[in-house]
Image (tube, rainbow, N blue to C red):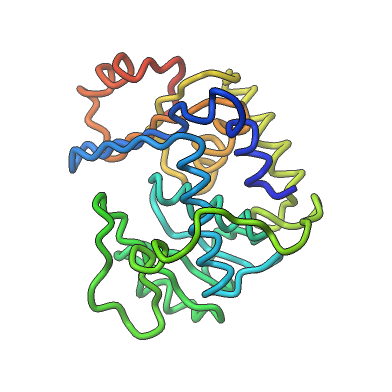
Length: 239
């Protein structure tokens, strides 16, 4: 079982499949988007098909993700894990780099063998104009791919998933961390955490592994957080 299946499958059955799984706010732009478990899985599947078919991502491929905490970042992380990739922190030595517009030069400097995929993170799905040769525009390409994904072969649970740690190890650590944070199934978690370093474990993996849903706020305005907590009926807070 891939890490993505382990995290998403519990949400994708029964009445819970249509409930909000990831709700994303950007207080700087006023953006709000809500994804159910089914919609999250569909986006992850589209991205996984892109990564496998166009970027040759397969089990063991090292994929660096240079992206902020964002619903599209969640989709591409889940996509990479669905393909069996090892998501790594350092782009040096990565075979593929996923990045935002501000880090394209950093991604290219790493000279990944499988190339660079750039995400605009635009709320309306606009692509990035004027990209250097060889850089894939995620927004343009992902829409061409199907919203179902089936790995070509089963993935062993000891396959690397995050900086060399295995699927089993990452999942166990996420469940343990969720318990330490007091998260449980059915919680709705308001978070302002970045997803770099420990933030990825606490702000995304621990939440999903606990069976909770996420309300992620970027560029948070502290004066608006209480209203969000009330309107989104959150039960826990991170950050």
